[in-house]
Length: 162
Image (tube, rainbow, N blue to C red; front, side):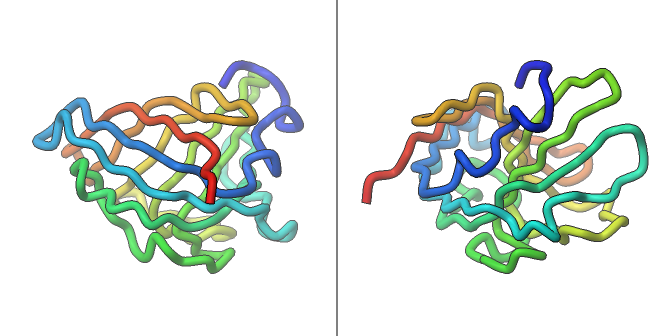
């Protein structure tokens, strides 16, 4: 995302169902595709702001779940991706604003405790870097791994019709 304020960051406009496609471009699964539905909803107000050390302001405006089988592209599954628990959702959107006013947003696939000061630093992860967000779509790159074993790729998501 380009520089701006947290007020311009993706928030409730992302609520709803998204048809997500991940394409692996590196690693043993390069060329493989995974598809699934991501269901997003607004995070509870009391859990939106995340206290983290450093100058960046971090919020989690959206949480949800997915039915995607991330292992199909070599990504790491962290916990229950179908969890709808607002403190440990299967999917979460994290938005940060640095001291330079630059705003970035990522969609994390995998359970991670929200609202705690300490986070594991050596755990696995699957994260989508939201490069472009608009009403009908989202696209960007993604990465997943544990320690130095990392797979990467690109993704797109469009509003799902049910």
